[in-house]
Figure (cartoon, rainbow over the protein chains, first blue to last red):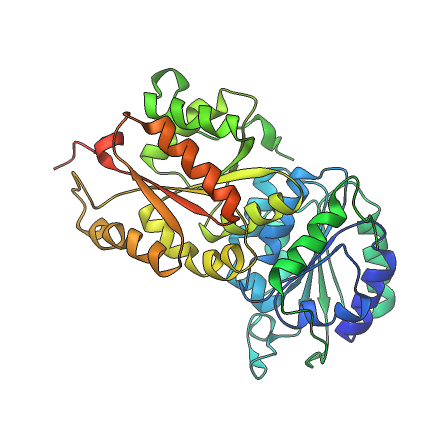
Length: 190
Length: 187
């Protein structure tokens, strides 16, 4: 499964849901599906899950999608416990598992050593979890997650490979566009 | 599944014994629409949290490592709500990259309350270094800060700090000295 193809499915099914793109390839592969309700991180590795949680807490009317990387969530595993402790139900936390730190040269981390991120999410109390490794399964599981009322963690097994796409490098512009899109009088889903 | 909303977040601390400085801080927070308290507790902050938890205006969100709070406050800001970060000096080190590369780079405003260990009345040798490093770490990141030492002018100083914080659209450090909050009796 290519991360770009799976990200296309996320974009197709997201509807009004805001999407938090984790640092690096997780954000980069979201660029072809650009919309105001996409937020792109530069640096602050590991923070995607926390940003998604903060947004989910203050906007219970929305499903909030996090596109995380395996390396990123391994840096902030405690945030999975925080998600549960905070009681959010409107979070769809997708973790792209390509077996390591792709962007720095494909050094292995996590799953090549037997780390099971779905089991970690389940252990942290996520209501629903799944691991999928092909596009049909991902579409089916993600469609269920986005229309559900419970917190989901989905581990998507993706092939290695860097993304060629890049967002704007103006961080405050990225902030303002995303924030405005979430205002009641804002641009709405884009 | 556990009903997480029924669990008291401020532990053993009781609102009735909350110190005056905690009341002042929470009053100023409320006046500035700061509704969310994102925390990793220490004993000092625990006393403030108990008072906050007795007031339905405030939402308490506990984190397991301090940099999570920076991300959570970023998400809350994007969603249109304000919050404060409540940590101890030793935890500032766990949050530095997120403060620099998320809160400062993307200009996310929030008060950053840091309970200072290692300054006055410290018994623990391992608290000395990080406690002393707090102002320098914030200076290195160009994060404004004031140290709160007494009840005198506390409301004025905190109100003014918050106003500047939201004008600048950056975090603003409010450092709680043991001169204000007291220190532990342990030798």
